[in-house]
Image 1: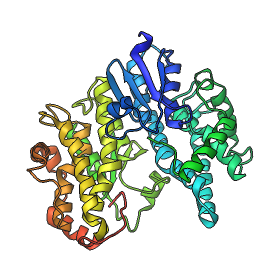
Image 2: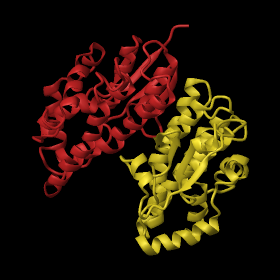
Image 3: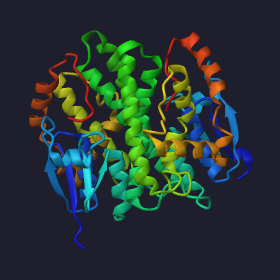
Image 4: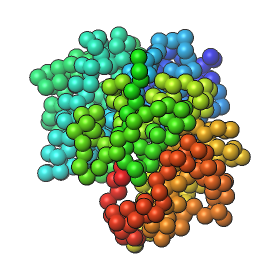
Length: 231
Length: 226
């Protein structure tokens, strides 16, 4: 595929925005990264995702594909010569998709709540976040079967779904003065996180915590705690 | 080896009905277990400890939860009468709209039917806008899946049947023939398919349940599963 045939519209800071890029990197597919301005939203974004007006969008030829995890599955199905992102067994696939949905629908909501909550509310969200991490620690044990990633020897769907949130997780730890990934409580996830962030497919797209910190201050000042762009 | 397929569901839930519709379309035998969601069984809690919700499909002892995840599992396990295209962009498209229905349409529909009085106009407008996307997506197709019922049609069961029931139960008008001729035609086609028809909860019973649970036109909590 010529480079200009595959484009990813996203931002450097958005976790869902990382997901298609990690998937394309896994498949060794060259793509053009188009940094979206967001405020105001570009014509390209409004045209290619008229329903949600959100990043990321994968533009393959002239076809836009929206919703980060749907894009990841699309990438896996189109570029079949590269390593598989989803396992071949239907049950294992269902487990990956189940937990990816959990991360995006339940756990992420608790993380977003934690970022902007105050006082008692904060404790409630923090409890939800840590409970979720305990569940994910258990899921990691079952999915990885002793191997490096949720996907086994290589990064898979659930690694991408959850791992893309590690930048924001580290930021939340710093800003809130809490330890979310903990050697005592979530030892599996702590090591997994290191491996994920060090992986060749991830390294170049994972934002640095310091850069995120600066950025989040700017955002907080402008928008008073509104959640990051998500889809 | 004899295959065992269990479905934990609730009679009124469009989500558990989706699972049954897919199994029926593929001619898969299953045992249905009705859950009282106010008094969840130990089995349900064992098979879905994370969400403690229906539907759950248990295939030879292995549980799968979340209706859209279950639909994909069903399609990948029993390959006759596929509900998803082989083409990756068509698959992505079906998944996109299924997610749209669950994350955007359903909450908006609920708000329009049972939301706050003072937000009613706005809620109606929003739900109408969202349904318009689906109307446009249908184009001239008989079903969202083309010539045969597909994953998106099954996911849209809420629009195809439950929406009409919500409208009657709450006294709200949303899916009119004037505004949504294609969706209305599709809904008629959809509910006529035998695998679908067999899996629709009785209308009057559902209306009574909804009125009892959510009232008529008053604000109430929206929960994802009935």
